[in-house]
Image (cartoon, rainbow, N blue to C red; front, side):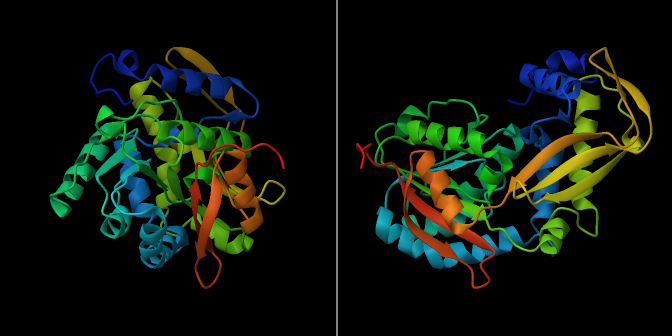
Length: 325
């Protein structure tokens, strides 16, 4: 969870896991820092700006699919379930689902506490009769949902192809954790980005206005602010590349010159051209997506996509385990 900022002693107030992940990530080779640490308040705001960019097709494409799919989701899943959204952000697409399924409660989960509470207040104003229970947490870790919805049938919501930020093993682990959190008989509505031409993919993560670059570089600003870092912001450049072998876009922070800096008093050196790997965005074909869901304990029962096949939405169910075959 995010800690309150302070003018002095900021490093002592920082999330211990943030400190551990940054220090360990800069010591390993190749260097890498988990993408979840993008989302301080500023990072969350920048990501919302990214979703409105002309190059960033996933948000508007998924929203259009939701308009078509959600009435069918309500028919299949039934109305009155508790909707649990993992990584809710500003919840901009959530009203489409809530209008269709008439939930008994809505539990948005996000790591950025201030951002979570603001978006929850706005949603409560739009749905005054709905019980909204904002839950500040890192959904990548085991969690126990509020007791208020413990006995309610649940519908998980995981839009935005956030599952693509994890390597497949982590994605499977997260899906299994979601199954444990939501329980047997729960359903999961999840968005996954499709594999497509390289030019379209790279442009979505390296926009002309430089918003995605600012989002990536904000991680350095957060490290400097919260961990007493001295990383020179002007010595790093945003990179977005397509790794065809692993079917993913990779984002990196590349050193533009030889640099030395400290974080929480620990010294580091980077040579010009060396990078810090900050994010993956895996893309899935239709069969790949269904295999991933099944590996995570979810049985796909419905699928929707846009006319161009850019993005897909899946509804899956946590069914009882059955012996082979």
